[in-house]
Amino acid sequence: MKKSEEKVIKFKKGTEFIPVFRPSITQAEIDAVTEVMRSGWLGLGPVTEKFEKALAKEFEVEHAIGVNSGTAALHLSLHLLDLKPDDEVIVPTITFVSTAHVVHYCGARVVFADVEDDTLCMNMDDVRRKITDRTRAVIPVHYGGHPCDMNGLREVIGDRKITIIEDASHACGAEYNGKKIGGLSPLTCFSFHAVKNLTCGEGGAVLTHNSTWARKLREMRWLGISKDTFTRSSRERVYAWQYWVNELGFKYHLHDISAAIGIVQLKRLKENNLKRRQVMERYNNGFSDHTWIETPPEQENVTSSWHIYHIKVPERDRLVAHLKRKGIAPGVHYYPIHMHPYYAPQNAQCPIAEEIWKRIISLPLFPDLREDEINRVIEAVISFEGSI
Image 1 (cartoon, rainbow, N blue to C red):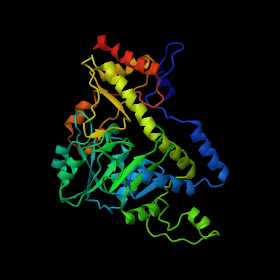
Image 2 (image 1 turned 30 degrees about the vertical axis):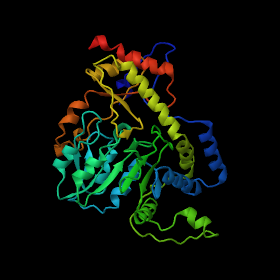
Image 3 (image 1 turned 90 degrees about the horizontal axis):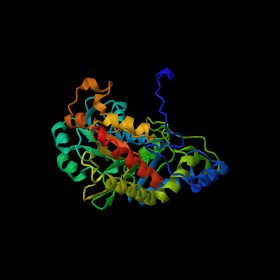
Image 4 (image 1 turned 90 degrees about the vertical axis):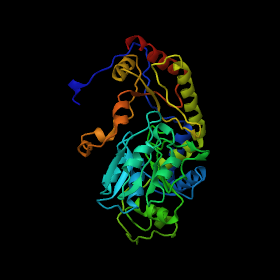
């Protein structure tokens, strides 16, 4: 957008702008990064390994492989399956575009499934309609931190040879039927982007119980090379220059600076998710007497990580403008992927998503959101009521 086309939002003098997301960073994260900087080793190394072990322990899984983004985690997971051009992968249409892009990265065909009208998670009835004998994988997305109907998905798949790859980018710390998201499926992918519940600035991880896949993932994240630089430098006493390239790989590794942040963030995850839940409860209570505001559900068998707090309202775009005028930055998560110009030629049919995205709006939600800021958001939303 050209500068001349930008719309400048003017706030009242003295009004603090409230973003939709903000990372929660303490002195502990800063100290951890400083320690790495002073160590002399900044790349993929011992701190990354420590972070991976901590992730595996926390999420009750055999292996955690750190990478540089949630997108990389999804790409590597699909790459394991050696997809062919006629193979299909089913993804929900309401998610971040990475979930679909990685299918095309692997040369396969993406099939868009509709969503549930309450949770905005993948609609299992539509998945059932769209599974074919060419379906190789399904990527359920735990939208906003609310776990998908995983039992329903397994029932739909039945005994077909279809791999489930969970996109848990929003769901760090979430639970399904009392079990932590992370070890329920063959492959689970986390994102540690700057605004996620657990942030490394940028980062991600693949979690799996499969040792063969874990070995391949570690090689593929480092260009298919058999031993990473730290291993060749430290574990063989002198630098061992020789290595083998066993397969095609990518430059997707996590580095120790990001991992250092992640170690601290993992320790704070439970506390930060509790703070998110408290914000959700304040919002729900604040909106409870206003029937034109539909608040997000949390089904009885799940514990959401509350990455996103979305409401459904009439006149969504006018409410967005109204909130901006009051110094509040809402979000819209997401414009259905199948409607973007790149994917529109597929002519996917997802009628629920096509209707519901016009009404969803994400309100500010992060651990350090203050009580006065929460009140400002509630009051600003409610004050729009007379404009409907």
